[in-house]
Image (cartoon, rainbow, N blue to C red; front, side, top):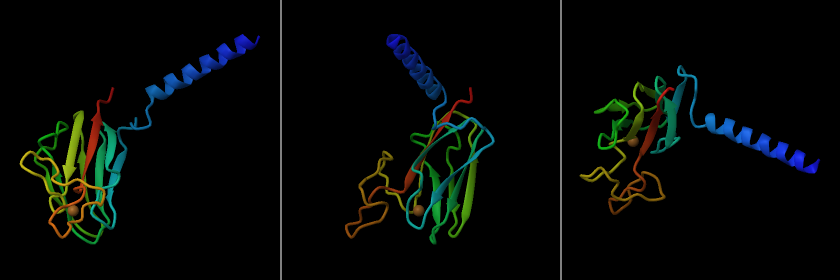
Length: 151
Ligand SMILES: [Cu+2]
């Protein structure tokens, strides 16, 4: 009897695990949903990384008192919107992009990111995108959207 109960509990565990693997929390199944990336009152995008499905729109919202920019990092961009270079105005400015292709969309703010010729951050660090007295930025102001196929 105890063995049967244990097998039953084990079976429930596997079914639960299987269901959670089929429905990862990172993806949204509603293709009409708009996801937001916020610039808070400092030089960073939050969340840093989001995952969407093909057909979804991402909206960037600038809640800072400084202008920022949304620039596609085309060295790595495989999700479309290559060459994007747009101003994200201070105090509530918004930009939206609808993603129609699976891939990744790495982006940065050209005002607050320092990239070398190979599009790598020069001085990533723990202190955010603020330039220090030596001219180094901390973690450049950047982020990434991962676009999953809508299957
Ligand atoms: Cu910026």
